[in-house]
Amino acid sequence: MTSSAQEPKYTVPGLSTQDGGKAIELLRLRLHALNDLSLTLKHIHWNVVGPHFIAIHEMLDPQVDRVREMADDTAERISALGGVPAGTPGALVTERTWDDYDVGRADAIAHLGALDLVYTGIIESHRAAREEIGKFDAVTEDLLIEHLRSLEQFQWFVRAHLESAGGTLSNADAQTETEAARSAEGK
Image 1 (cartoon, rainbow, N blue to C red):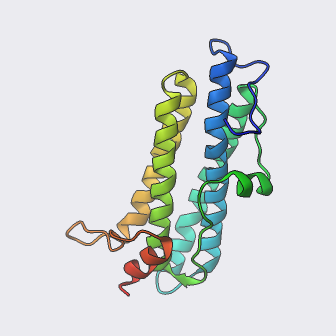
Image 2 (tube, rainbow, N blue to C red):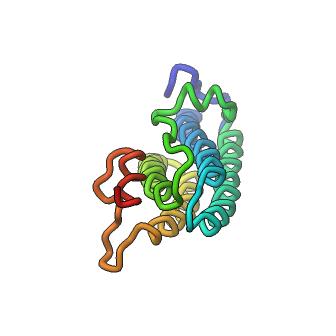
């Protein structure tokens, strides 16, 4: 747990307060990641340009709405476990373990190349949290599985724009969002 984390005074029936505290701590970063993702999706929504503008612009709003629901579900689970969800921008920026999205106004395909990496990061970290929480809390694990179902579907939507007929992603070797944006555009 981080230095700001404490074992809760109570948690849900059937969990020890120690396990409740572990779940709260794992969910803290998931909450930050989901809040960050919803803001990143809106940033892309506002800054996408080019011939695929309207398709991408309209594809992102339902993703934003669903990701915001996931953040709300995560915060409510933290509260149910006896924790205090930190939903402020300051907490997100201070506690996150990733860099800010770094693509500004860009072509739709460039943004999708970068967004694919964003989704990869959040899905991998959600899976790691799910695996850890699954050792002691099936209910919270189920919440994360539900999130993963949607996040993986959203990544599939993104990747459909990046995939060749042969099954290769245009951003396959990119390590950063900027590289992924350039690769997706073919630059």
